[in-house]
Image 1 (cartoon, rainbow, N blue to C red):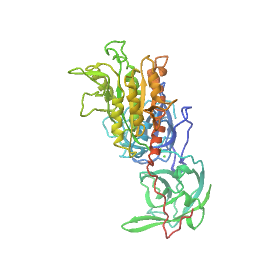
Image 2: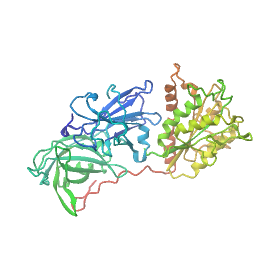
Image 3: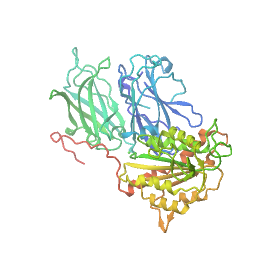
Image 4: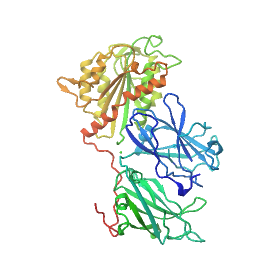
Length: 557
């Protein structure tokens, strides 16, 4: 069992996959064991464990875990929390408190990349071991023994931040004078806790020192910490340092705090690195003084909205139809929708998606429509999550008659009308079109895409079936930028892939869907960034820089 003085600040691990990550993110969660899931086998593998924090129902773990983040992949995560009873590494020897399932995209796509979820209870399976870190909100249950069904198990808080490229490390040592006496018998047992500021004004723990027993003038051991753990490479980001008096029962007494920045700390031992440790109680300040002894040397997430549209041929009740509703497996339309939708839905704020169909005769009069709600509700075409879309799709197949011609322009213009109303960078729209390759209004569709290229939107086209997709390749515009009436599209916003190229030969549909999603979503981040840059939209502001007190010292660059 790790003790307070044996806590590591930041741990890095080799990536699970050989793919080049879109970016690295650091996950913070509040012993917690992280498991990742393989794409092919679906087996859970342990990625890592946090340190153990003694005697608390609200742990805030220091240890962080570095994961490679891929926007275009569904990266399943599982967090298991335990009450540790011994030094044994065998998890079955400890009390299980609860678990949470989520995806990495779900964390990154949450407001301020901070996800809060209630802990659930189920008997965990002990598998091979791997490591990540966390913090817990609502108090965990005091007694667990594999969880108590129906009992509130507490809350886990997960946060993520894109890591900078700074590879520097800092070695420093702190000492303090005349700290406040907190123990009735003896003096204090002080230790320090370091926090870096976040974009939303909160703070994330990044280091704890060891405890120095029975003194008001401690000299802590020197330690080395990656600079990006302290400030993620932003030398002016505020660093908050809290000082506590250690108590065996975990109810540590707060002595006081002070703030600084990496730029200030880098000045080394001098009058610039002497700080008042302040505790405000009824407008009276108490605390002490601490000083350094020696010193040595994010993409913003925009919510995506998605509309789903499908065309096709054949009677859905016949096995020859691309829309055939096999009771034992999904058809190609459903697989494509699920593969792409389950990933991109993590970046939508309310998980409500307008789902439209085109190319069908509608009841009761058989009117041909190229833009009809799958759920049958013209006033509210929104479906709840991908499962809601799939349900609406299957229900629509029972009521509409698939019919040509197949026109793309109406649905492209439909999404463009939404995008045109929100051009401030607060939203970005992704249109998913699933088609058998037939298109009857090529000229109008090209014009709609050229016009849409000026708006915050992207279009994904997935081709199903064995037809030729030459028209879809032309719309993709990778080789020749799409144009209409002599006007080139301002940027490339279309990505087309034929599903048949990703079908696994062994019939593993899960693997087929993962391959499809990876390629079809690969261009979305660059398309989003290209729009934001073209419109001068800046990412969310970074944490405010540290401003040293004027009466103490002055910042010099």
